[in-house]
Amino acid sequence: MLFSMNPEISERYKKIQCKFNLPQLDVLKDTFKFDIDSMEKEEDLFDNIRDEMFDRLIAFTDRIIEPLIGMTDSLSCMYEQNMLTLEEKKKLFELYRKIQALKWENNLLLIKHDEKKTAVWINKTWSLWNSDLEEGLTKISENLADKWSGFKFKEKVTNYHG
Image 1 (tube, rainbow, N blue to C red):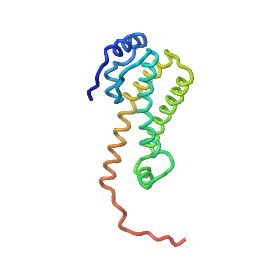
Image 2: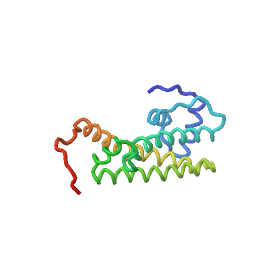
Image 3: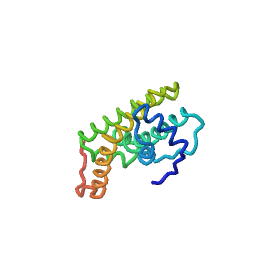
Image 4: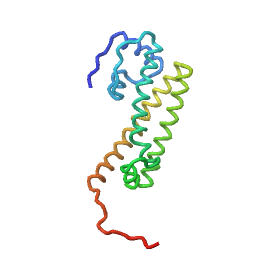
């Protein structure tokens, strides 16, 4: 995905990137699918990056993880929960737990801006994305796609004679 790179924003980010050992801005923008057009203050830039990363992270929680480990709120959730092994559910819950911790850390940063804690949050989120999240959700998605492709109702009808 190509993004326009405002030189002023790029320079502002390079300052905080060096200070806190953050990932490259173009890599963050490409991975989390966001663009930054303008910022008035460095603080705004930092918060905007965190907000964009947070939105992408929570989208995965809402669309993928919660329906698979939570209540069955749709017919597909009911089937998909039964398609997963206990081990897969445990791995998903572990991802969910880590994302929820990041969610509440983000909420704290919304209440009280802290440059150092924001940098730590960005690095933790980047690390989770690259270590567990992308690989784990890719495997689960491939697994469910395969299972849906081969899904068939049972031929034999069972009757309950309670």
